[in-house]
Length: 119
Image (cartoon, rainbow, N blue to C red; front, side, top):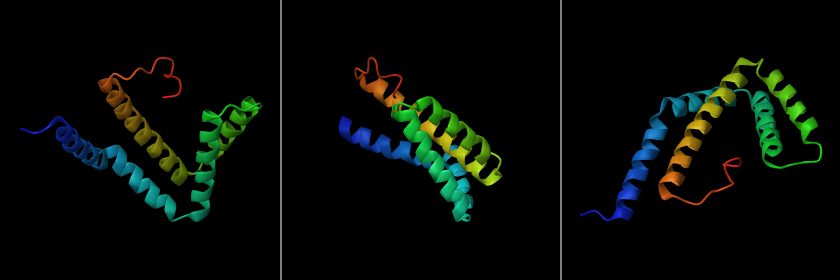
């Protein structure tokens, strides 16, 4: 008989393999590879991703202005099809991973009351 912890480890490996083989992950990897051919574009995308993360996750006194700046930056970057493909693929993959993580947290029945806005 397989111990429950061994089952979790085995199923975790299966989940990781399923994620790696998903269309979302394959599209992200292809878009990332394409973007890596253009270092200047990659740098712009990375700067946007960093700034976007900071604005969304850390409150600031001028958060409204920062969000407006990020929106303008996003609109400009979305005009570049290589960057747009990469950012879209990353967003789709992240949403899939977030959904998996939330399902796992729900299965563990962790008490996350009041944390839905940050998870």
